[in-house]
Length: 354
Image (tube, rainbow, N blue to C red; front, side, top):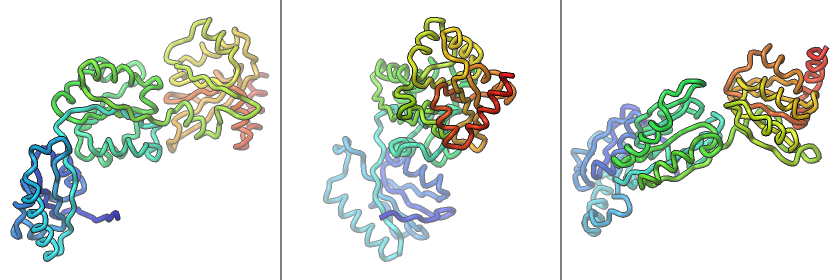
């Protein structure tokens, strides 16, 4: 059973060792409660409980059994506290405290929509001591998602890195070695152009435990937000994800044009002219549909459509900017037909080609 209670300005007694109790106490403070920390259930006397609405007993984390009080004494203290709470009408609950062992969790935040976070991602954020986050992660509710954490912006802008990658790696390792649970929170998926593998390697080299929580990649989700499927029966049986961070080589253009299927380009707005010119030289037909989907899942999401021969002009006229996902292939036409925009593509193509 799950209960919700407004704790704003109300007194909550948290009983347990200070270190294991730190995140739990911080979580209740973030909910607006006035937290009174006590070392144990036995210390929660009737005087201590006076005026409280909730008492929380923090059990030692697993792996610290040697530091637990004798079971009989702990049970007696809890039973006595339970009786005092019953008499006073105070809610009582038990939670497991945090370990002192540092670790890192690499989390993919998806394309920026809070609802696309995974359950594992939300759970890891809730137990974080430090969160190193990027600008493309869903950060609007980060203070609520990670109420016990220090929040550190290490985001990267086009052409400007607030903290270089080597510095991010060092922060992950140093915080973890100090006994903290560190969350690296980034947009999309950590292993899809997210440099998550480099961060994992840095943690493993320092013998820091590290796990990866995958995210919903913008390569699939952002086209879907615009109604464009990356595959469609009878139209495209494959899709290729490409980084547009730097211009491709002629050989890469040739391979892409010859693969068929759908091409999805991330971080490709600035290199769009080179990309379409290279694909045209490699033999891709001029009328191939292309879409630029900006700011997927945000309130300002926008799709600009054209063809290989017109998209540069169309994107320039629309002043397309990153973050955006480019989709090249007949699936763009399928998506526009599903959303009723196929006529718009035809008119745009005709007007720009004339």
